[in-house]
Length: 202
Image: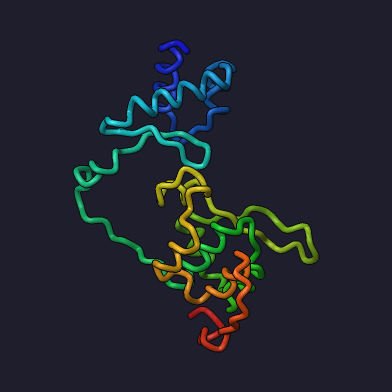
């Protein structure tokens, strides 16, 4: 692969207003061979691995971002962290692991009703999107995560999501532990619905 390809990819990504896929870059570079584009992206990522900025792939799209260990130098003011509610955290985890998923399916896994406000909060954050409608009676709306979700949590793809054991250790699965155990084939009959408290989000 020529150095010109790497330079062209570098220039295209630097000027791009949003992350670009390898296919989009190939088209932008006058239908360059897709394998050469992918090879060039990997070479550039390796080149920037030790630099102040990194070339990273999130959800199949590439962009430059500040090296994680240098981000604190660029913060002029302390960011106000918006903490998700327990309900929103649970719903986000369910969408991430089971997408595309409908609200009824989310409620079935959680064992409680999910308010529309919970999904609205996640969509306002840009982490969840409407992914269409299920081809079933009533054609319910289905939800999925976004590239912004992957980017925020530093994931290249959903394959990098933490395992169920890690989430449980972090205390994120307590209200839906039984449902996840069933889905993962644990085979334990531990109906603890009575311990889940109020059957609606507050």
